[in-house]
Amino acid sequence: MKLGRRTFLKLAGATAAGAAATACSAAPPASAPSSAPGTSLPPSSSVAPSGPPDWAALRKKVSLLLPGDSGYDNAKRVFNPAFDGREPAAIALCAKPEDVQAAVSAAARRVPIAARSGGHSYGGYSVPDGGLMIDLGGMSSVDVQGEQVVIGAGAKLKDVYAKLGAAGRCLPAGSCPTVGIAGLTLGGGIGVLARKYGLTCDHLVSAQIVTADGKLWTASADSEPDLFWALRGGGGGNFGVVTSFTFRTDPAPSAVSVFSLRFPAGSANDVLAQWQRWLPEAPPELWANVVLSGGSPVGCRVSGCYVGDSASLTTELSRLTDKSGATQTMKQLDYLGAMKYFSGSENRQSFVASSRILGEPADPSKLTSALSGRRGMDVLIDGLGGAVAEIAPGDTAFWHRKAIGSVQIYSQADPRNRSAATDSVAEVVTGIGLGGGYVNYIDPALPDWMTAYYGDNATRLKQVAKTYDPDKVFGFAQGITPG
Image 1 (cartoon, helix red, strand yellow):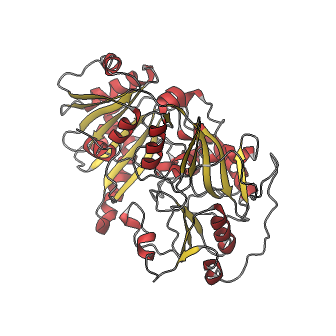
Image 2 (spheres, rainbow, N blue to C red):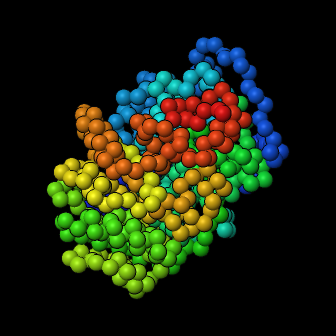
Image 3 (cartoon, rainbow, N blue to C red):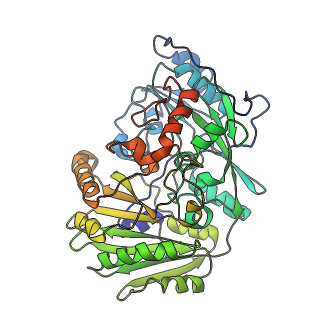
């Protein structure tokens, strides 16, 4: 039986997240303005333009939707219905980088600007109330070029995996089918193949990005290297609007074995204690999560995959010592089949969530106590380590390289009464006693969020913002401010 990723996590007690995404060629088109390696942008004028954007003029250049237009209400919708009440002043339906340049130039420093790719921002930040939404859905090409792939800004993971799988190539990424490759990459890109192949951002070769002055740049190791560093984990919505990424890929594995272990009631403390010892010592081919589901008692499941055959997976699972009473399922699939196994429904979902980082083994009783009696509340711990930890925390903007795992605290929420779910998530977060956070599970209520998301990389990120967006053209509540 196919087990969708969202169904998979909901049964286990959580839901995947993700954000938007993009991809790019190693060099800009001949007509695109570029910059010499290391060149800084000139500072923008300190005199703010007056008045609202000239939407009529912009409409002559870009397909534009205004409130009241046919298609506007559908176009502004994102994954979480909680944000349906937000009203952008305009939505630019962009099909090429020049459209993005025109939109940014028209609105910069007049109204808030936000790009929307997959529309999975946990804070709804891709729906700027009273601002310009730059919809990248028309830029969704996935072009496999030998060992590299060029992916358009509006591409969703389901399309990325389909094209890569058909070409026999692999890119580690997230699992929710409608998450965009852009936000996922820009926040790091945790997924079920991360321990073997690394984060999505670790495979980035170059990115094309429209900055606050309306110019199109190529960021790579040799061109705008500071910006390239920041785009690998510095979070979506910062520095500019990425229009495409170029990634290196790996040969797709011939076998990926998936599994699920559901443990009997009352075993959550023991299982979590074992999991925290077992996974860090496992080979990088093995990825696993542990999901704790609120209730009385707290439920527990361990699920994951192994890049290899089911016989090898069986050997690794035997090292998770006490599985007495556990219900086990296992299946050997090809790469594309495994990615489809972890994907789930494309239907919109209302939820409230936050995140923390498991930097070192935690006291299992703290997590289970925080969830005791809380039906509908779940804690999902996704394993890190392996290839993720082989890169130093300062080598990219993604800071949490040495962590055991990322922790998502998730609750389904009635859109009519989100406050109860919000309060419950806050109480559980406080109870588990963990710090840090994953920017792709962005939480508007997270205290000291710059440090939580970016650690010691925060200072450098602020300097990059000062160079490329000194006037906070792309500013939002948890946007990186110029240093």
